[in-house]
Length: 103
Image (cartoon, rainbow, N blue to C red; front, side, top):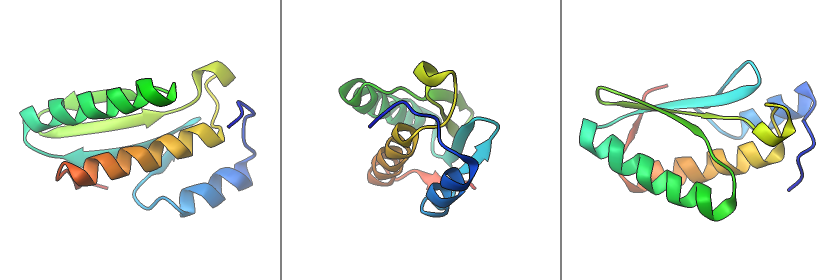
C-alpha cells in the first residue's frame, strides 16, 4: 500500500466500512474500554502487529480506556490506505482481547 494521501471522498468511503472509527483532523481514532492492565496488554499486541506491518498508531491509555489514533507520518501526517488497514487490524486484535468499543 502506498503513501499517497487520500481525497476526502475516499476517506469517507473507507470510514463507512469501519464502524466506530471517526475522523479527527488528518487522523482516524477509536476508543475501547477495558480493565487498566488489560489495556496495557492490548497496547502490546497492537504494537507487535504495528512492528510487523511497519505502520504505528499513537496509543493513549487512561484509566480503563485506550484510544488509538492513526495517520501516516511518512505522508506528512495525512490519511492513506495504510491507516485503514491498520484500523482493521486494531479492531480484530481488540475484539480478540475482549475490549469493548466505547464509541
